[in-house]
Length: 289
Image 1 (cartoon, rainbow, N blue to C red):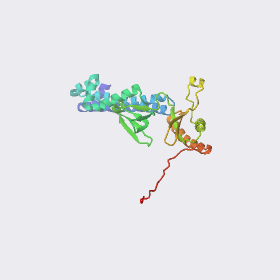
Image 2 (spheres, helix red, strand yellow):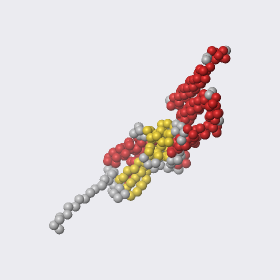
Image 3 (tube, rainbow, N blue to C red):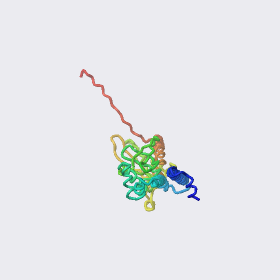
Image 4 (cartoon, rainbow, N blue to C red):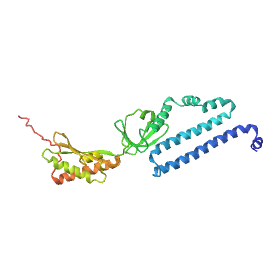
């Protein structure tokens, strides 16, 4: 039946029609596969599935899409007899690498390999908070075949090639444990009561709703304080104190830190703890002297 249908098609049109059918089928398969991946990704984003799979799914979606198009184009080229050698090379492992290097730059290939290593070894994943170098901070929004997209806290996107970020020293606030310690630093005058100031800081931290107990079983058994508050240094005009406050995640820690600076300042004012500020003494010198 199939041969009878083909026999009705003029020979000159058979090859273009077959190539067109292969390309259309490739687009359809890639589209259906992409929709299936998108459906799964939405389930992960909505919390119906494990969030740790989100990075793998997005990267795998792009990788599978590239492979489908590569296979479809290779098959279409194979239908053209003079180009079958090229198609055979495309479908072969060694030939695939040679063609990739030939059509893409070495840097582009290293970005793909870097992306694969990131997905496999997971130094970070989507929704992790990263600090890179000195001034690059934000949340990982996407990891694709070429680059990693980071959304900073001004809602701007930082796009870093995978080959570059793979060689960077990163600070990942969510690696293995989302909890984060927020330092609450306050300076009091040398005339103020240090013990009272430490007590106020500890009470304010414990009372904050975002605070969590970060002690392990051994520390609890040994009676370690819930909120450590220590004298950090002796400044030129202040005794500098630091409280260790733990929150469930970085956003909660940031809010807690802002709230505590305000609440501790108000308690200090109420309890008579002075926060020193710089004084200037101006001397007018008589030019006649």
